[in-house]
Amino acid sequence: MLERIHEISGCRLDADGYLDDFWPNFRKIDDLVWKLERLQSFEAAEPSWVAMMEGDRARSLKLVDGEPVSRAARSTAHKRIRVVEQPVTPYLRWEMHVLATRVAVAEEVRVLDAGEVADLEIDRPLPELVVLGSAVMYEVTYDDSGMHSGARRIDDSDVIAACRGELDKLFAAGEDFQPYYEREIVPLPAPRVTV
Image 1 (tube, rainbow, N blue to C red):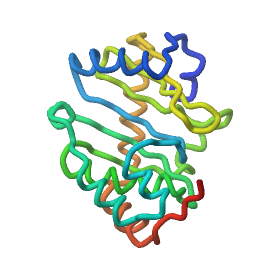
Image 2: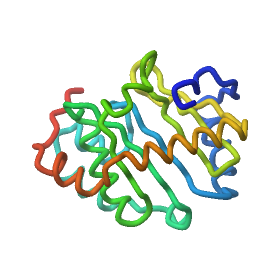
Image 3: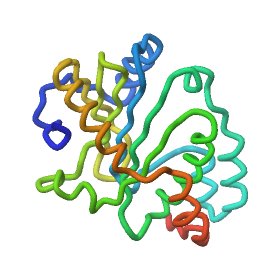
């Protein structure tokens, strides 16, 4: 089902519409939050990413450490599957530092090598997904430059249940975040980012 999400009908939302729709649904969540992340590079405006782009790794990591995790995020169970290609992109190296802070307080994260999902990606990469309990799922969308462009909201309970089952299997197959992070990310030099 995950590889066919793009075929499932959904309500298209622009970036602002996605956030306007997301937060009310997040506040009334009936179960855990799932995230499936597949893209390797994004355009982000977070201060810590901007610092990394400016070549200031120390400030970037300090900003990552100082980012608060919301009370709502701490009180709701979150599971994230992060698919990683080699070589690890500068963006993903930075994101892994962000995830290291979240794992400590708010999320369970597993890492999958892209080769482990190749059988699901014959026609296209897996989607970027956010699943809020059993009620709503978003296929998060990005434009060609990696800028967030919105989402498609999917409400079909059978589709959501099928995707949650597949996410469970991918999560079980993934590696725990901390050993992966310490082995594959921590030893890497600061990413070189060109603007």
